[in-house]
Amino acid sequence: MQTREKALAVTAEVGKAVLGKPEAILKIMMAMLARGHVLVEDIPGVGKTTLAQAFARAMQLTQNRVQFTPDVLPSDIVGFSLYQKETGKFVYHPGAVACNLFLADEINRTSARTQSALLEVMEEGAVTVDGVTRKLPQPFTVMATENPVGSIGTQMLPESQLDRFMVCVVMGYPDTEAEMEILTRQPRHGLLDRVQPVMDQNDLLTMQAEVDNIYMSEEILRYIVELSQATRKDARLALGLSPRASLAVAGMARAAAYLSGREFVVPQDVTAIFADTAHHRLSLTEQARTGGETVENVIADVLHTVPRPRPEKPTHGR
Image (cartoon, rainbow, N blue to C red; front, side, top):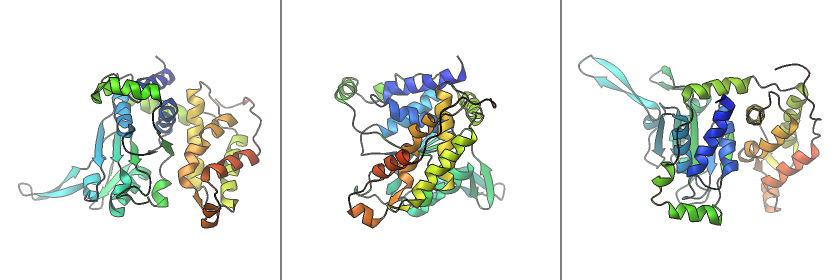
């Protein structure tokens, strides 16, 4: 089985446990191929945790899960050094992030200090404890779930942390048929038992390298930049897309092309993933919010007004 086919096989396996959500599963697969982190936002009970567990099982990734309650400490995440009397030295004990897939469950219920402990982890793939920096296992992905802001016990994530998530995926309620199947397969772990491993860590590393090499023309790069600049100039937005967001769009577009079986990016790859990559990074002004505007409307307008380059197959590159 070729590596691209293995990636598609993973989405099929995850779909056995998370029913009726093929688009969300595909976007998460793209983010992992593009070396990104994923934020899953929705109400409790729609399968966010099952989603992460299914990906870990299908890809044979080591996984740790932390329920982000208010009493979770930064040391629980990044680890700590403990004095060992026998040797007279401090010995490092790894934290929960020492794995391939770290599930931060209900991340917006914990303290800002604990959330900030994830910033270096997500950006550098490393932790620093007592002045010593240690690399995390590769591949490494943070999949965080959050309840909608306003739910009991939640607080807003800072913009700097939101910007480190490549995509934000909304699960939504299952349709009637999917929910009927969930009910007939109780207990819940019965759905996860259906998921079979179809690849391993080395396969994912190989896929990530192949995605890095997907060709992106200067016209496509300029299109991404112009989309980002359009959000920065839009009077309805208090906060537009950062250069990090532009890199995320480019990475997701490469992954979309890869899963489509192409070695080059076309404009449709960009438009297909733009909303998922941009939505959680954009912030409306108070005037726009009271006027009934939504981030979805702004994204739709940006995609409509920024000229799209013609999809031409490159004459050079891969």
